[in-house]
Image (cartoon, rainbow, N blue to C red):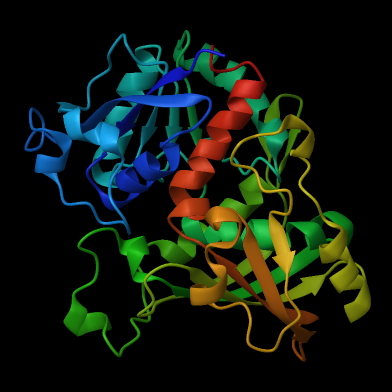
Length: 350
């Protein structure tokens, strides 16, 4: 197949670089444009920014010149890695100009006609796109978002239980990596040997987004799932990998063996599509006393699978467990790339 021509917006930032790294050699998508702020526009990419990820940047970046974040005819769709302070206006402009936007920003996540997509969980939510296009007068363009990086771990990590046993209540405490704060991120004097017990707006996202993701489309409208969530968020001195300590109340009684079996038997509902970024086992249960750990488990399946462990009875609710998600891969750039792959096989990226 002829590859899609892809633009990465905010390409000089930490998430933008993760997009470029993951798209290197992608069988369906080819990066033909990198864009950033006006202070970087006109410079060669490697002159405009320092490479933040391990290893060397892809060789094809050497000759690429940074453009401003304006729509162009050469693009089939874009991956924005933009800060939310500027993402809203820029992403809307691209959608208006016939360029689909597969966003990583929070600006349109809770819009009722914009899919908040985790393809293994709510693949049918792409049915919202035609109504979105009709309401806003988009022709070929539209908006799709992926959730907050910690929300992805929470929802995907609990989805096997939600689907089989039902969940009524969740109490979650996050220990979130410093890479989630972007670059240059948190000052060393604040985070080294320390924990910051507050991340602005983070708890609100974790408490509100799962209801939309787990909701159902009824008569063309998205009805949010009923689930009560209490979240407390902390920034910890870990480079990559958000760890979530979860207590939950199930709708159906289940033994530990039944819960473990539910996880062991869960495989990706996307497997028949052979999507390049979709792991066969997107949720992996580990029954070891010291797992999951960011250093040992965050890059599982290239960072696209979440890891669940530490399952034990909870004296307040029913059960408690720990979930680990790679925040800049599955929780950001990799999740958005998987969303684009799902849109492609459903004929929405013509």
